[in-house]
Length: 385
Image (cartoon, rainbow, N blue to C red; front, side, top):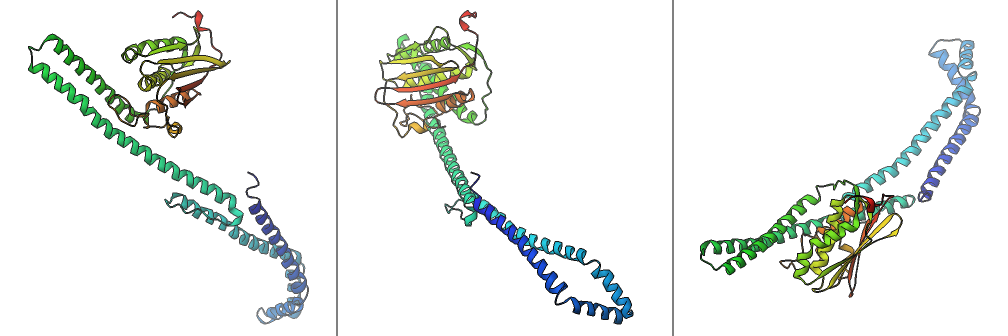
């Protein structure tokens, strides 16, 4: 990197050397050709005549004044003249150098333009030209990504607003039915109440997704770290999903040591694992088994893997799976696909803990892997639960 401006540094160095050399040459020429040479006598005679005619001085007085002012101070006058000449040449050089800054300044103004026209600078500024073009490309890419994300967000808000009407209409319809038919058989009444409750819960999920959309960019995800048993958390999480698993004929197997000590924000990490397990249940094959495996591949690292069988994630979607407002299911079916924030929030939480999250998907299974740093902690097996 330090050689990027080698041509510019060489050119500036050459200009400085040339200025010093030209200044010296001019000074010597002035001294030997004009002051001590061709113009020495004419200048002296002219000064004496000036003193005689204008100042009414005698010839001896005028000659004496010439000797006092010029002959005795010739070296001082030559040095002063040389310094003035040098300053003039330096000013000229600085003026040429500032052209580089002016050119770079104009090029920086081009960073804010929306055109794809590349920035072009002179050859000695090739390194700066390359960097400015990289910055311009990055700014344009970020602008496009932001616009695309904003469009996805607006589309999802529109979709969610539309999706809210369906369960809300069902809830209102079944409640009106229950109100208008007080003599309805108990079995039918229970069925209507169950459907209304199910639609109301779906409505609650959709409203929660609205809150996620509005809160995501506002919260800085503050962490409240403490020691906890990761194995216990994963097993409790699997138990909480029993109703959803039972409905689809699925099961969860947690393969982890009896106690895995971890330091982090348990509430935030629980949300990460909840999102991953929810995706596995939603997109997994009915009747299949979901595996949650946790181990310690290194002394100060924890690895948590969620694996489910089901339709693979398309390869072109894998690089964008953790971006905001990207949904795994683009079909927008009524019961699958949220606001596209679950995995984005999961990644942010994991990265705030200093870890990483990744995904692999093929015809056999889809696997999400979370790696978390884990310091030297007390063994949780001896702690009260």
